Length: 257
Image (cartoon, rainbow, N blue to C red):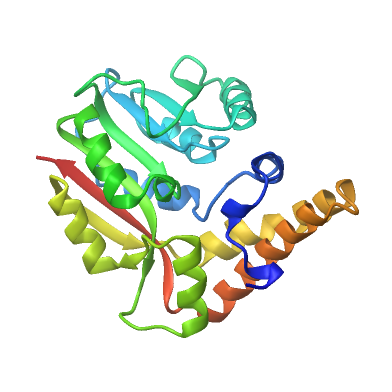
């Protein structure tokens, strides 16, 4: 495997955290997409409890808070992300409704049937799509919703280069019909599914990284691991430009039945 095609999981977590903490978003998405997914969710009130799992620094969480009532708990494994999450929530005057805590999506701190909505943008892959759907379901009230964005294939067949990249990075990637079937099998009514537009990758995720990469490389000049990590990020962006007709992120919204 070339130096430019490593899985991100092979790199130092502190370097990954430092790099992505400088970005508004830690994965593809946009405020418009967050609002669109939220539009499929009914019956939220000021008393609703919402969890944003794998929240990162909370860019999408603040959009949620601006467009939905209720109290939101953001959970992420990286303390630096949560520090930024809480400071930015306070800056936006959301601290009374939005709180970030350090924690693992494998051991969530909620009671059974406590939540009205589980949200996770570009993060469920860390535990696995099917596993997350199944293990998180018990925390939702009957009639509660889950909304997640997930890497998905658009076609049954694709070029070997991009297939190999994703099978190494995330073997759980699958086609949209198979993902919808997994939502239903896990005990949810599939409510909505839509593909994130290209600008969620180009404008909102890859473009901000150009300046961030240069600053990161300057800070870590001579650090081979940092240089390999940035080469990996560049390679991923190049692959998206080349093969975007074959894959992307898809929002899946389900209702617990």
